[in-house]
Length: 299
Image 1 (cartoon, rainbow, N blue to C red):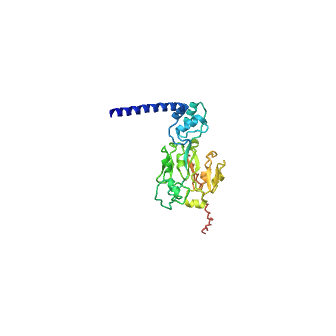
Image 2 (cartoon, rainbow, N blue to C red; image 1 turned 90 degrees about the horizontal axis):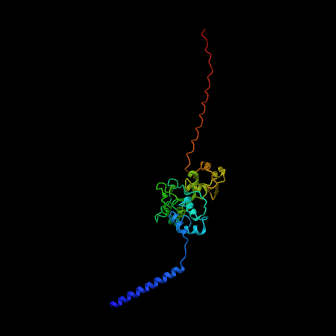
């Protein structure tokens, strides 16, 4: 019995050794040499694996940067400083890009967009969007269930419980685009931060006609075109009853925001507008002078 056990163990050990030798030979024969620069680039990246670059992760980004170059590669989390380090490591040059930030194109807070239905189900935006248009009369607005917040790996976007709308912390936002991808209504957009972090955008996605949009939300864009008329830089277009500001053309004059009758155009990080001068006081109307009466002299 003992000899049988020893023989079995010895046989298994020999088979294991032979298989190990075979696997080693096969691995050496078919191994793929990997460019060591891939490891260098990956070590420079922030390691967020957020997919904001359009690749599957930081490793996939590093492989693309080494094999394809940097023309189509940009890490939004690391930004220009990280891309400059990668370019130096690869002996390439890279063009700096304007920093971006996520903006929420919806102004339909609870006080401006009343609920007309009650939803009692799985509380995610994607679920609600797949079932019906939402619990207000605006079928284009934010659903407020926080899919964007759950998708953000940087704690940069939160649902305000008072307004029911997401708010972006621009200091934390890396413009990875995860929140925009998670929003089933498409109300989150990546835009250039702008000089001094100042920017203008239409915080509305409602494409209904003016009266219908206004009835659904007091802050909706009604497609009146007043903003487009006052813009001297051809930065505003109105299509499908909705205005849109092209940030590449906008010169931050803010005339459009002052002209918008519903306040749908948001001004971010601008100084307060100067107070309008008080109207000059109207001079008091001159009082008619009573004619002098002649007093008869006593004789």
